[in-house]
Image 1 (cartoon, rainbow over the protein chains, first blue to last red):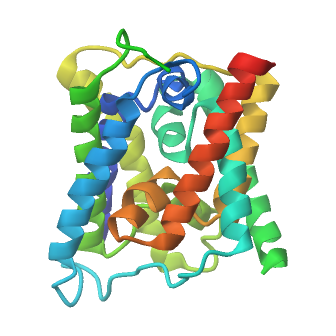
Image 2 (image 1 turned 90 degrees about the vertical axis):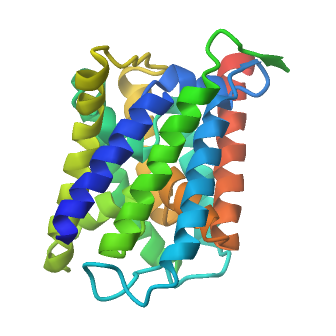
Image 3 (image 1 turned 180 degrees about the horizontal axis):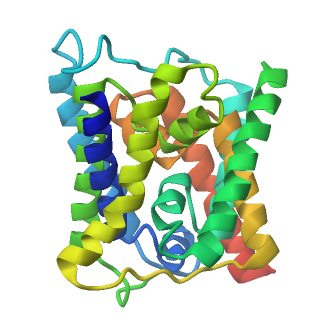
Length: 138
Length: 145
């Protein structure tokens, strides 16, 4: 059942990204272009997503465990450390260059395979390499 | 600052955002997992370590790929994709996004949608950092270089 609900969640995630305009790198860059002609649309994506998730999460938390799993698996790390800030800073640079963050990159990989599949290969290579670097930093 | 009203889509973007939040809720309520796509992808590359986590991760990724096709079937319209980078620059962007999200333990979905909804100060720091460097990067590319 966890697999079925992960699939359903993924479909809604991918569809939401597409409807929101997140699969269009030019729209993403338009949102990030605060010093040019600014398209604020994606603030509504983040706002809508966070508010719905925050309200729902408060209700979910009252349960002792998920419907089809043993426990809620939440991140254990709480502190703001160097890897968090360096990694996030790097991610922002890559996002600014490409107009693609990991979700939209996955969702558009087959829609625009000439660009998308190559991007996914390098993204995955970066994830593997980044894990090695993160381990050294720890 | 000038607002780009030609491309501004507040209602559709809000609707998409609500769906993204709903997707995160479904994954947490039923499977107990955070919807952090970079973490899910990274988990696939080390599947030998935790085989039991592989099926739901694959299912989520498959769903994410299918989602836009469902939208196209329902609306009967294509999805606009206008690249901002090509070739080596795009690949470099992909590599940096991968490196950054692995070192920083998350991206727009995990730190942004999920972390902020849990009022995590760690995720707030991550979001403010990547928003700042992304805005600076676009400003440099579009207005300086």
